[in-house]
Length: 344
Image 1: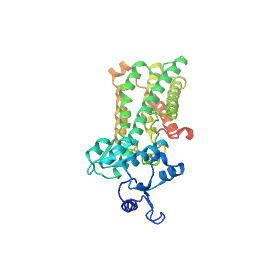
Image 2 (image 1 turned 90 degrees about the vertical axis):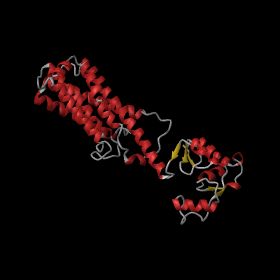
Image 3 (image 1 turned 45 degrees about the horizontal axis):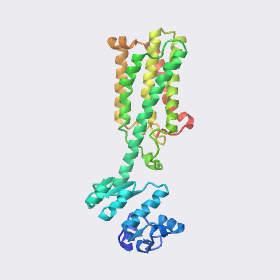
Image 4 (image 1 turned 180 degrees about the vertical axis):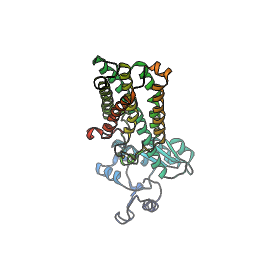
């Protein structure tokens, strides 16, 4: 706490909010800003003591700026709350300036990055939680779509090398990308934040949306989906002895359903398999139901089936498609025996 108020006032406020423990802290222990020399005259030990101080009272606007600079030099992301005209320079210099919306001055509100309309500090915690949830949802959205696209590329590429029936045709890829992939991805964007997000350390502000571990997950999950599709194709050709159009239909359904179930693996790793931010999102289940309905229409509505070169695969074909489509879901939930980092 850095304040221009008297030390006794600052101590009582700090004790009331739990910033200090009156049973363990020395009574009325605070740094008096009036006794502090200029920043350039402080020794290294004095700077360390100043950074470790819980309460700094009678601080001037210049001292608030110096303290922010010291913390920023140490690599910290500094948030500053204030309400007065004298707080405006520090609010501007901080990485995140937070002004009070009710009792804060106009100058403080204009200098801040965030304005608390209710003047409650708990709102800052809620804003941090919401911000982390938004970043996590963006990552889930991108990882889901990228891994689905990678699975299609690998399935087609490996299918060509196998010199057999193509696992998926161009119009079928277009159907997946424009219809079935879109709705689950959009539903991921409105997921509630996992409670585990607030237990994780802050994210480096220089960190990109997708880090190296995320790209590794994209290609790994995409490869698993593609392998499952090719396995369903091989079973249809060599075991079920299906004609080419049914083989392509089975591979198409395997890919489509594997991508749909894949959305369930976008949960936070610390969340449970059953109860998590994905399964609690009603939009996810609505998207899955809608996409399954669209797949049935694509297979059994003759005009659309003719355009997409699909046909009824029969009971055995459906069983193969459903069975192999569940393989990526299980592998994703197991996180490949936890060899890979969490997705978000």
